[in-house]
Image 1 (cartoon, rainbow, N blue to C red):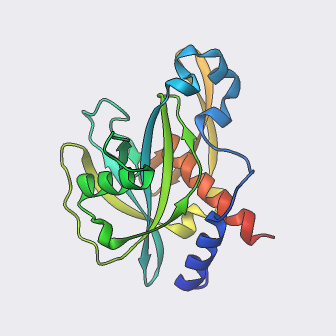
Image 2 (cartoon, rainbow, N blue to C red; image 1 turned 45 degrees about the horizontal axis):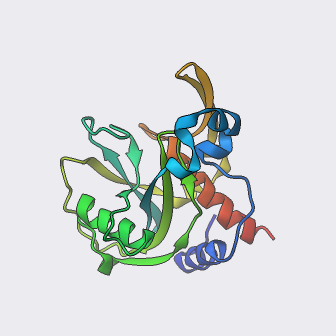
Length: 212
């Protein structure tokens, strides 16, 4: 989709500027009737969290850095996710949370990250209100993985994410109710749920600007 790294940077920055009224991809947006009928999913009860959507500036093309969570964690065990977590009282804002969690989970310090904006809030069926913070990451970063939380770190080409043919919308029965969600199958990995939804939302933000 992008002819050069500079073009990718420019289009992503432009896409994240200002407001956006496109189709949402969060659990709330995909399943509004289920959400409104579930007392455990009231907006005021959602736990604030933030993640970093790390876009690594490889000379061969931009990539998205992702992690695979360990199987013993309480929330989203074994799933592919962005580095991130709950907002702590000492965090100044969502950006501070995303940067802190990224350094804690995979050892990538903020000196390697250029924060450029946010995609928009993502509300999950597991009770979180997530702020996805987008940042360009220098390819010179080094990893220091928290093995308690993170089982694996890998990168996916941004061109793969930006191809809507890779955005599969599926459904499954959860607690007796059918729910919709996104899946991005990549090689032997299964990117789904909140992570897939935020990638779909990133695509929507960028293409809403560049297609006009």
